[in-house]
Length: 69
Image (tube, rainbow, N blue to C red; front, top):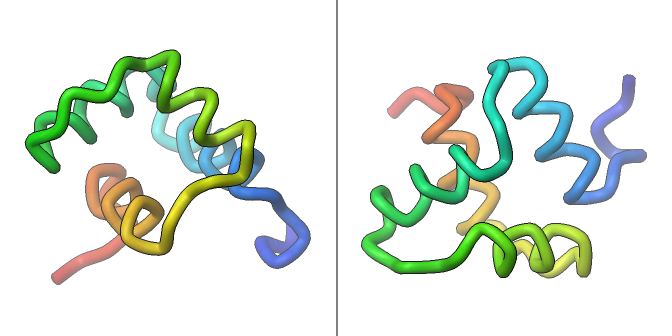
């Protein structure tokens, strides 16, 4: 599977499946990590609209343990 051919939504879903995590759980962890209060439905809509920023994706990867600092 080539990451460059994936949409933001497909990439996040791939990473979630790899970590056996639900999208709602990721949304909750993102809220705790960033200090924001985004509802899971809004996070899902952001994914489906392809509206993730690089910072969002970086935070997701850090939460899922894909980036080591």
